[in-house]
Structure formats: C-alpha cells, structure tokens
Image (tube, rainbow, N blue to C red; front, side, top):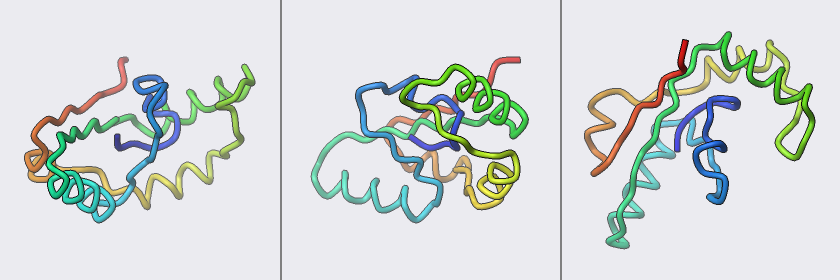
Length: 104
C-alpha cells in the first residue's frame, strides 16, 4: 500500500503490516521481489489532499488510541514534498492496482 499518514492505509488493512512505500524505488523493489517469488502483488495508492490528511490526523490524535501519534502540519508538508506518488505507467506495472481518493 502506498500513501502518507492519515490516508487510510491502516483502515483498509488492519491485519497487514503497513509500510508507506513513499518512494518509487521502494515500490519497485517490492514488486520485483514478489515477481521473483512468483506471488501476486497489488498496489493500493491512497490519493488524499494535504488538508484532508492533516484533518484526519488531528481527529485521530484527539481520539487517542493505538494509532495516535503527533505529526504537525509542518511535518506533513515535508512528507508531502518527499512522497513520490505512482503515475499511470507505474500503476500499470502491477497485476492489480487501485487508486483510492478521499471522499468530499
């Protein structure tokens, strides 16, 4: 799964080990490793605007719980700059891919 904190990765995969896979190189490595092992792999990209990510994190933090950890807006802005979203060409490399967008 691919997305920034607060995008919805954990909600989709509560029992899976979540790894943000922020960089294309990380996703390429996982895809190649799966191909070498002959296992199926899917890419689920969570395309969520910065303001919505910040809103979700603030809500999650105010409710407490095991997934609550403080990330400031400034930190999220830096993460947003570092994140390399997959493009159509990359999505096409995966046997199954999906783009999950935030609901308005």
